[in-house]
Length: 155
Image (cartoon, rainbow, N blue to C red; front, top):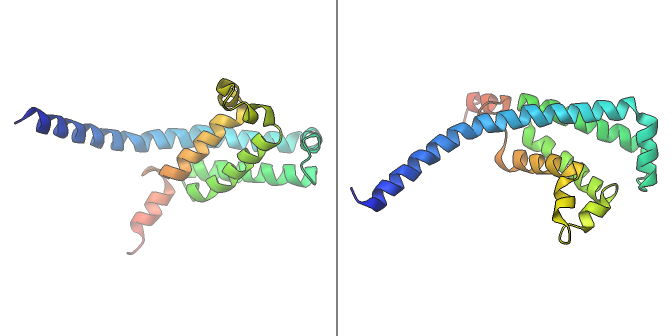
């Protein structure tokens, strides 16, 4: 066996292991960040007045309605991620909410993306946005209701 084919076989084997473990990683990510989205949504409901004032301060129209809509999407999106049900679908509004957050309440971090990238990456929305993009791009993995439903549906 040549060194090149040995390397190819080794990479193929590592790829299979990585792919297998990726489903557990996606599951862990969904559980952790889904629960954080739920907590964020519940917090917005519990502090509706304060949150509406903050939304108003960053010029978001209809701040009370906006807070309620954001909170609902965070809670429903978080539950969706935890269950692995329509995870990609609910990632879309979460991504939109986080991009809006950067363009409003976190504009300083956004505008410093090239001059001070650590400010951008250490800001609150960054890891939420990163996670939403990961779930959107890679889906919920095999440890999900989406996978069970799709696997059992006739083709």
